Length: 167
Image 1: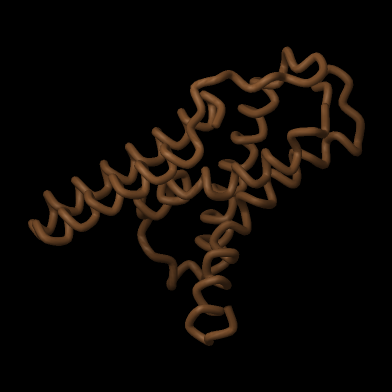
Image 2: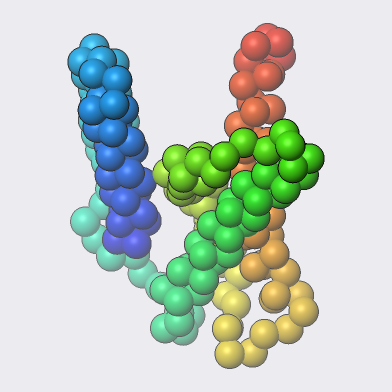
């Protein structure tokens, strides 16, 4: 796992930990907090043991701008997640809209590595030069936005498949 992906994963786990602490402070449920903490530690340990490698990956080609490309793709995916929240918020009539909830707005960021890592893996060998963008290369950014926009539908469909027993 590259240092950038490891950093994204650490940020996501830190956010989940912050949410767990917030819920503990608000609801004072020690059992739930302990279970969430154990689950986070176990998930992090499993991912770290299975995917972390201390070696730097060898870059193919001239990937000097690769880090910027990854950051821009991640930003577009997060922008898609924010757009999804805004879309669901504004698609309801004004009288039926709930009050803005920062937790619901920020929650997709913590799921973002689950969405972003497959996107990055699929586009890793595309060798896109950001200084020479064409219409076809620009589509990569729209794909990142789309992945962010439809992240919730993906998880909802997976949950529905499990409940229906069609998994």
